[in-house]
Image 1 (cartoon, protein in one colour):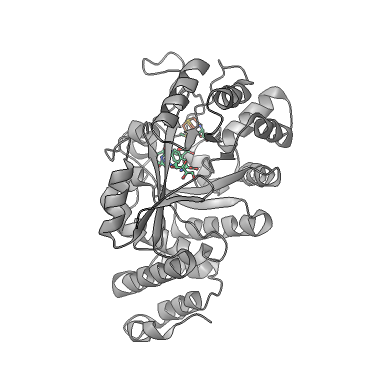
Image 2 (image 1 turned 180 degrees about the vertical axis):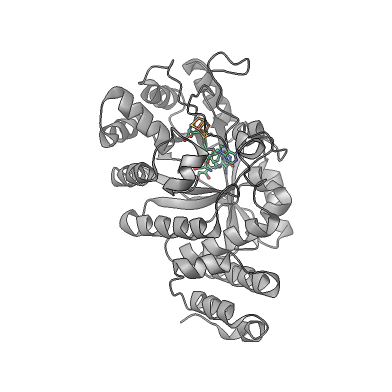
Length: 380
Ligand SMILES: C[S@@+](CC[C@H](N)C(=O)[O-])C[C@H]1O[C@@H](n2cnc3c(N)ncnc32)[C@H](O)[C@@H]1O
Ligand SMILES: Nc1c(NC[C@H](O)[C@H](O)[C@H](O)CO)[nH]c(=O)[nH]c1=O
Ligand SMILES: N[C@@H](Cc1ccc(O)cc1)C(=O)O
Ligand code: SF4
């Protein structure tokens, strides 16, 4: 049984309802959707108690190691007509900033990545109607032929839906062919908020919440693991967040395919969602802390790894969230473009030395991992 007693004194100083839920969490019991929603509303001493309990659960489940992965983003095209209101990365074909890499350019980037020490390439793009629908297979095959040892983490559920629809084949056949070509895993992006009403206001043409769930489950069934994400801090509410977390853990109980959960705070600066549609200017610092902490409480029994996105949070807030339930620092990235296009100034690359320094500053232990959380080296 989990130890509750060391928290007793702290719990006497906070709201009884908060204390009740935090005790349940320390006992390893399930935090219900309504309880998660309640926790998103706590402030002051209750918020710090939530953070302390999330940090304790993190310590019990995954210990004091904080991992990171050497990976290079290859955003092979930004041409996209979906028009998501939160995205400044996607551009129409004739936009002066539109670009598409050739297969040779993508392969060259993967080769360089390997030479720099990367074990992964993270590849996502716009939905570019000028590219052949077979581009997804061609990219994977070409990278595998040139750099066979690199793990290819690529193509969001939306890209899977788009590619398979254009080829007229099932999601399952499309995913199996990608896996046979050498795909290693898929990013769980395009999740945004898995709620029909919110999605309608974020983006008119994007895949539905149901399709996201179905494609993720299909990927897991064919043996392709994925990350899980949420994009929060725009027109969404704590009720959406708690339901989203609950949906992710229910998927995980069916498939076991999620490697980690990555909260992605909305980068608002240049987006139409903020400038024209009245969305909030991204999450506040307290919302960032609560997102990582409540995720730890609700997911701890099902998804052990919670990743901070340093691109969205910046290093200082990322460090804080690593003290509030998270245990993974994400990737080196090298060429981050999506958040940068939306106006973040957090940077496009983080070196292993920087990760190690920021992790040591927390009194924790840095370690490099692979995409699937195999530890490559611990920096004791
Ligand atoms: C840019 S898309 C690339 C893959 C594909 N086009 C898709 O939409 O699935 C990848 C993810 O980036 C995230 N993203 C885009 N713009 C963002 C922003 N302004 N703030 C935070 N995340 C953003 C969204 O979660 C989105 O699903
Ligand atoms: N969090 C962001 C990522 N993450 C990619 C990860 O580094 C990696 O692919 C994953 O950990 C696989 O296990 N990439 C971005 O471009 N922007 C982010 O905010
Ligand atoms: N972190 C995501 C990928 C990602 C890429 C770009 C983003 O803007 C956000 C997330 C994953 O590994 O699954
Ligand atoms: S989020 Fe993806 S689908 Fe939406 S506009 Fe951006 S690149 Fe296109």
